[in-house]
Amino acid sequence: MNPVELLKSLINIPSITGEEAQISLFLSELLKKTGLNVLSQSVEGSRINLFADTGCPSKVVLCTHMDTVPPFIPASEDKYTIYGRGACDAKGSLAAMVAAAKELIDEGEKRFGLLLVVGEEGDSIGAKTANGLNIQSEFIIVGEPTKNKLASSHKGIIWMRLISKGKTAHSAYPDLGDSAVDKLLNALDFLRQVDLSENSDSGKSTINIGRIEGGLSANMVPGSACAEIVVRCVEPVYNVIQKISAGLKNLVEVKIISRSDPQKMFTVPNIEQTVVPFGTDIPHLKTFGKPLLLGPGEGIDAHTATEKVQKSQLREAVLLYKQMIRQLLG
Image 1: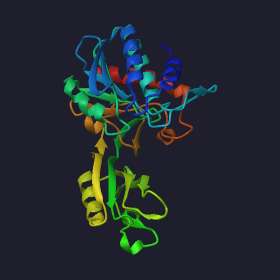
Image 2: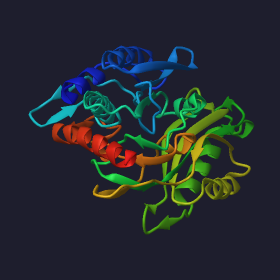
Image 3: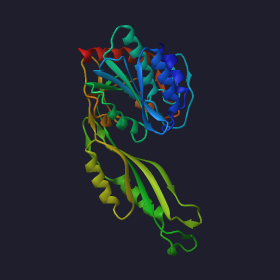
Image 4: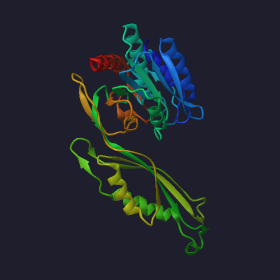
């Protein structure tokens, strides 16, 4: 199985979060052809997780996500690189894991499984639902773009929505209204100045104001506004939420969409290590044993218009996944 050709096929199947049905069907049929038993787990509507194994107990599980951020960008390539949405986040890991699974089966190894989930780029609903499969593995290797280095830790994440309420009025009579946008701007100004923790391993906590909406027309005092924020933190999320909520009191309503604490991962010898600033499904995969994190591509390319992965890293990832499984199986 050629991971480069497989990755191009995967990229060309749109799978923006919430719209993973087509790629799930494609992968289900592909995995069956490799000799794996495939279980489809309903998550929400037509969205499904896939778990594949050989029929033997899975001591080690390879896991990554099938969804991507918008917009869809088809695959393209040059001599050394594959481009397109999901190239590194995380269809590169997905292609390498499927190729590694095929080679392991051909070599007679059966004590592993493959878990492919939906929704990682949103609320991790796929990972949360997957715990109900009761696989009871000892290790789970999660694929995300780490430049094929073994990540020893990653930051926590808080995805929150700030909701501001005011009173609509004619803009010629602003004293008769109450601007929800003004309240939201004051809240955002606080967030841009709030002092969050940092440490020597993971660096500084960061806040990204990713989306803002408000008002109906320029000649109206806006009665409602909202913003979506992602905090990547190096301290427990409870502490961060308490600090932020206290500063935003009486300005906006704070709704937590998703949260997970900073993570420490399991590592194995003879693979270079790193620390990554992004979050993963790892905090939500609670029943799958000790987590490891490795995948081809670089996090700085994810979610960009020029998302890419090096073909050499893709091929290397196949070998690394096999090496890690063999080490973990002992």
